[in-house]
Image (cartoon, rainbow, N blue to C red; front, side, top):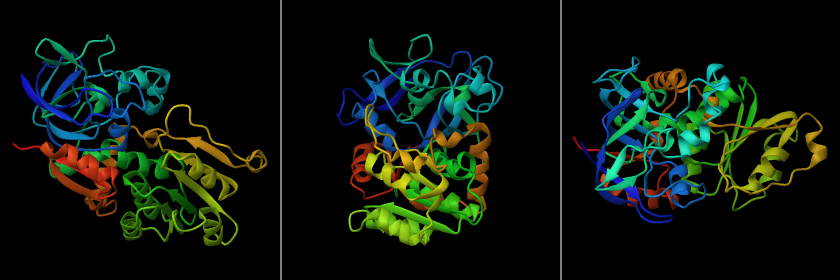
Length: 367
């Protein structure tokens, strides 16, 4: 069948719309008609070749839609089911089998290889090959083909067009707080970054009962939103000394937890420096390969930890329905971060997000 897709033809290019042929679902694959898909910072840095992917490619990895067909071996979903799409994993390595699919032994190949494990792809433009399966989905298209491990069924009474960010940005920030760091009620946390991941961490910290939730950012409107979502104080990194201000906020004793969601090595240094002894910094922000950070070794000796976190340590089939349930109860109002755009305005949406005019763009599909 033919699908309409926003194609990235070369690094740093704008998205170009093309009519592509897509395969029917093969074994363990699911064909999904897209209803809405979030735009994530990772889409932009991959478009700009921070991480190597083959071109031309269809990006997008926060998809939500309706199952249209399933291949052999798929029993988890059926045509007509509402689903959210998340990252890909093999399902059989030791990490996948022990509840850590975000650390799958084949994570890089299955999410950034932009093809099936055998090297084939599902999309074509005439006789030319177009790469798909980015993060198990390539959801910047009217239809997508996804491996069954990437497909999560959600209740039909939830607002499906807005649920796509649960597949990456929201689960990354929220599950980092609730699962990876397991922040306790009464603990203090500093969140570096006020984008969708940082704001998701703020909502989760408020839900966890953290007594102090400090947010560091540079965009005043995003910092105001963070306050509305539960931050107890905000720090404008462009106007103040971040480390000194946070030490004052903590009463001089430091924070139990910090989250670095900017990818800036200077912010990571500050996120470690503001910890009290035995505090933990969760590293979420994506930096260019090869970027290094300098940390004070004597400070680390006093029980401080730096913990890398992928996708919030989530198990999508378990955690996405849990997060959706929290949203239904009004406890995780991630919809307040969302600005919607027609799919055809994807380039405007990415510009607005990069320029700080919106926090989380969601592209809506007609029909």
